Length: 118
Image (tube, rainbow, N blue to C red; front, side, top):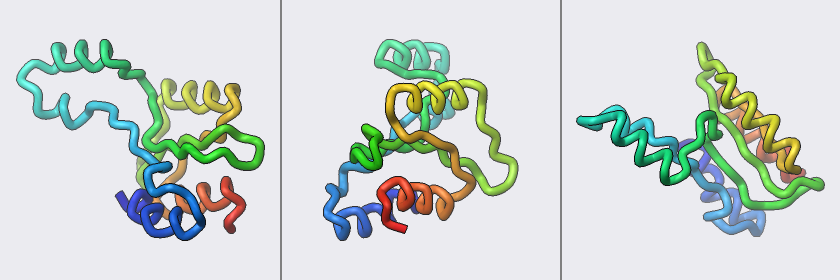
């Protein structure tokens, strides 16, 4: 939430649409509260759920990339799953900047680097 709130102020100040930065929900909240998690997961997969999908996307081309995707991990203990590592490599191979970050401050710094706004 901190990264999205920061973008809501900073992105438009740089001339980018507020909605250019978006969350990619992965269904974990639905799964945690579902009476039938298997049915929910089946529905999510039909709708396009992908294992390892990253947390945020930025639909702004910059520095030769089509856009940016980021995975946010906790400062302590957060681990990138094999599926997330595969997703990062896939996005990179398709011409997107993609990375994992430890904490909101690191992710914000990554977005600034990506946009050349350091």
